[in-house]
Image 1 (tube, rainbow, N blue to C red):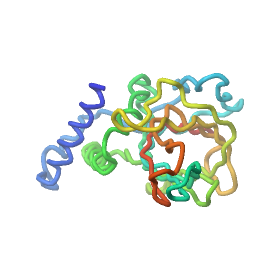
Image 2 (tube, rainbow, N blue to C red):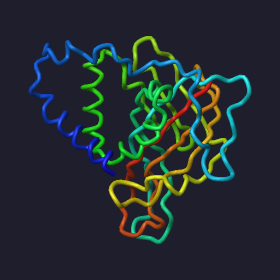
Image 3 (cartoon, helix red, strand yellow):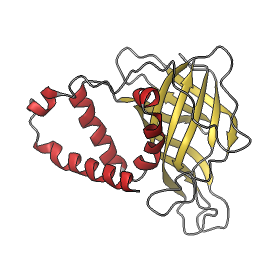
Length: 243
């Protein structure tokens, strides 16, 4: 948890000081001194352990890893408010951050970050990413995740100029998140959402298969007791896409 607390402190410090930095401040001009944080070669990156037994299937033969991302957002649910019914999944939204260099060069650190990001308020986390992006001149924010209908997740990378990639998918296989997964913020939470293998549907450009892995949070409570008709649960996850 020390790592998570450190990340929270750094994020809060950046968020509280960015408004005092002039647009042409030397801190932005110095950048990160040539440190590459996005767009790294993924030819040697390896999928993390594919969940508990039974594990997720391997990528199909002939496919190559094309993107690795960290997603931070919410899993969304609806309820028959106040009832003992189980909440119903109602899509998700998330910001997707380029994690290619971590996957290629520091995978052990990458696999800690979903659990760390969920401890940080999403607004602070996004602002921190914006600061880093401004300092490095690299597109750290790679895309957005949302649902175009109740069953079709979309991962849209067209937010960056010239990028035409978009993944529209459906669940192919799911396994329970491992026991060691972070359940939610702090000591709370109802568990990490499942790990998934995703196949593509109409509307996809640039991809064949995808994975949601190393999840943190996102699961709803077992019943709708004391819940409103709609609510959100914070989550974070790694996303691996193949073409």
